[in-house]
Every structure is written in C-alpha cells, then in structure tokens.
Length: 328
Ligand code: UT7
Image 1 (cartoon, rainbow, N blue to C red):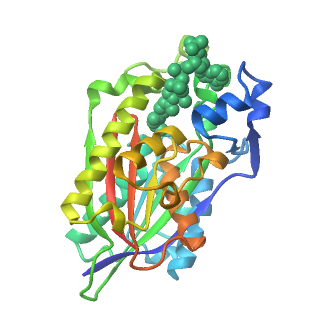
Image 2: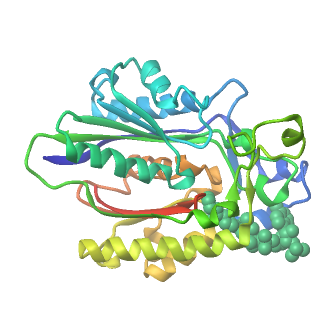
C-alpha cells in the first residue's frame, strides 16, 4: 500500500475586492489592513455561486491532474463552514455535478483546520480499507455570505475560494505521502471564533438576523495568541514524530489567516520566509480552502517536486488545530 497525492486543484471567483473598496464600506485603510494582516485583496463569489460550484471547479483540476474521472472516486470529503445547505451535504452534490455516483460522501466541519483534517480522514479511510482507491478532498468556502460587512474587525479578513486534492492508494508497496500528523481541539475556547446563530442552540429569527448573529464573530487578539502557540506546538510534534529537522523542509504551508501569525510560527520553527508559502495578500483568509489553494499553487508553480518534505499547519474555530508532514 502506498498512498500519495495524485492531483491538486484550486479555484477563486473572478470578482476582486481590494482594500480601497473596503475603505468605502467601513472606517479602515489600506495601510492598516496590509501591515496588521498582510492582505491586499480577496476574491468574492458571485450571488449565484455556491460552495459546491467552487468545490467542483477546484475538483475538476485535481481529477485532471490525477488522470481519473469522478466515477473512479470511492470517497469525497468537503471541508466547509459555508455548505450549500445544512443537508444534503455538499460532498454528495459536488460528486453528482462531477459525474460520479455511489462514493462515500460527507462534509467535515473544522473551520480553517478543515482541509488538513479532511486529508487525515481520507488517509485513515484508505489505510483501513483497500476499497478506497481514490479519495477526493476539497476545502470550499463562501465566507462573504457570513461576513458582517459593517464590522471592520472582521470584514477585511476573509475571502472566497476552493482547493482540492486527490489521494490515490496505489497497490504497490511504497512510501506513504503522509509521514506524521497531529490534531487537537479545545471546545472551551469555542466562543473566541463563532457564528452564533442559525443552529439548534440559537435558531434563526428576525431578531438574530437584525443582531448580525449569522455572521462571523471573533476575538481577534486572543485568537491570534492561541493560533501561534497551537500551530507551533503541532508542527514541532510532527517533526519530532517523523524524525525530520526544520532544515530538511522544502516548504511550510501554513493556514493563511494573518501574515504576522505566519511569520511568528515560522520564526519559532526556524524556517526562513523563502521556505514559507504565502498568498494571503491576494486571497485573504479563505478558511477551509486556504491550504488546498496554497498546495495547488505550490505544485503548479514548481515550488514542490516529488519527494520534497512539506509541512502543513492550520488553526481555526473550535478551537481546532493541527499539523501534517507530507513527503510529496
Ligand atoms: O482563521 C482562523 C483564525 N483566525 C485568526 O487566527 C485571526 C487572529 N487575529 C488576527 O489576525 C488579528 O487579531 C486581527 C487582524 C483580527 C486584528 O489585529 P490586531 O493587531 O490584533 O488588532 P486589534 O484587534 O488589537 O485592534 C487594534 C486597533 C483597535 O483600535 P484601538 O482600540 O487600538 O483604538 C481596533 O479598533 O485597530 C483597530 N482596528 C482597525 N483599524 C482599522 C481593528 N480593525 C481595523 C480595521 N481598520 N479594519
């Protein structure tokens, strides 16, 4: 058994929202946003473009690169906080649109940690049962619909998009792509980053809509602190587990939440900027999509070759966090 990443893909919507555009919506400015977050622009989905539409666009590229059709997939996992519907799950809808049928489909809710959590879940399935020959993992988010466009603390941060990867279990004896992984959660800190209403705890009413309780609420400074410590810890654990030193890493792909978080984590790990993948300037924080988009850009841009060691790490609502070491 040898499990590897056979293909990657990504998609961002056409419409770009710049910092200058945001200056017209809230009391903010380009300099604050760039220096405090590293973001210059983000992509915003069209009104009729849902989570599954972006998921399908990214998945098509990943399937093409893998050289397989959707009918060959035995599992599809969509990581998202903005599914098309509460049910049916977005994974089933995406598989249908891709032309596949019958695969094990589910959505995974781990916010920004969703993409690497889904890679871990797909990998675990493939290790357990040989019937999972090809698994499709997608992170897709339409965060623009859960953004409070009158709250400058959050509306400058997020963007829409999707990233995808196909995992293949080749029959050959050989090395696996995922060398080590480490995942955690702490629900006692759930209120730091939450979408308060719309679930069974606080169902939708006219009052919850008026109070903006269907949009992202975040205690930024506190979340920042936890993000740096948690990602650094998880990265150290996977490196130690795999017996790999930071100098051996070709690339670190961190979740794109804030350039200052990315720099703080990479400095603590002793990895210089040139080996840290960063595209936050153009996309902002796309939550579950961010690592998938980065991975695809790194592969297509020639920054990752087969056999390279790459460290993925993420942090998000839950709180959830983790790290994963790949031999690409
Ligand atoms: O993806 C999941 C995980 N997410 C994260 O990890 C995000 C973590 N948090 C962050 O990235 C940062 O905390 C933020 C970018 C959200 C905020 O940056 P900060 O350096 O922590 O700023 P702050 O919240 O401490 O606010 C500093 C000042 C405040 O003004 P006063 O009280 O000092 O007068 C804010 O009101 O900056 C003000 N401010 C803004 N000013 C201009 C907050 N947002 C803005 C804005 N434009 N958009």
